[in-house]
Length: 152
Image (cartoon, rainbow, N blue to C red):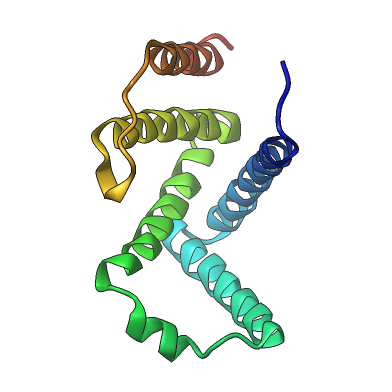
């Protein structure tokens, strides 16, 4: 099995993003356990906003007002979804399923949605036919989630 160097870098970067995601979910849930899921979400999004504004200031990018005028209204929905994800993670990590259960179920949900979004060309994606490999992948992730959640 050979892979292109760009693909290898993307695989490693994606794996690292997964580590960061699990770390973020853990840290957010700890903050939520000391306050509330909603307050934690506000705090972490404020911190993220400040960090992004600092980085944008260093880079000298165009002003946010220019970008905001060019962006369609629906494109701001990602912020609402992000806040919802943080609140749900704050609740579930602090429940009986814990961090590993939360992250594994997130992976299952992401994989199912992504396969359907590709298959039906949702959100302007290029249509990609659902293959048997996709169904097997989802089934195996589901099996892993069930083992993690119910066999401990």
